[in-house]
Length: 282
Image (cartoon, rainbow, N blue to C red):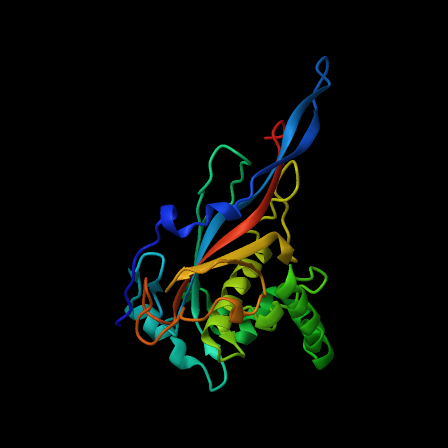
């Protein structure tokens, strides 16, 4: 247990230019008589709403820069699996999500909390993860996986293809929604792990799609283009859409032993989601 790092700092680790706040126009909300309706403004922006650790070391939090939790019960149950659990040519990592209200008094959403993969048996075993993704059997074929090349191309020049929810662009397959990724490129594999955590939290109803004007929709099939990510540990890089190739930002990010802000192979991602709301609906 030698990992360590600098804890998350919202003042320095969030790219404020990526929020891209805009006023899109006027909206109308119905009201009971005698008012009948009121008008409001449509706000749209990218909200940095969640942090995701993807960790080679079990119970290590890159967000906090230290180890958190862990017990004899974890060891006995196999929930302390580390990157050494991966077979050659693959990567295994744990993942931790922290839903944080980093922007107040704008579009109000209430999907806050945390998720710790060491306590999630489905994250440890590919077969168990299929319990919440029965549709994965439909795309477990070469043709479906080859189609992900189109999603990768789209993500590398803009945003991924929402009609292919089983793909994570250059990161490969959304399934299984577990800690195993068939890729030994450490940065790319950890980006895929972070994307899978976004998918999982959508599937179980822990987060919602905030792009509708009057509410936050449950999206068990994620809308990938409504999310962007920025890696901020072990170093800080720019914001990219789901599935973009790590070749755009991995140079010098994960050097041996220690990055500029934390241990190598221990990643922290800031997740931005598209927020769109009508002020009179809030």
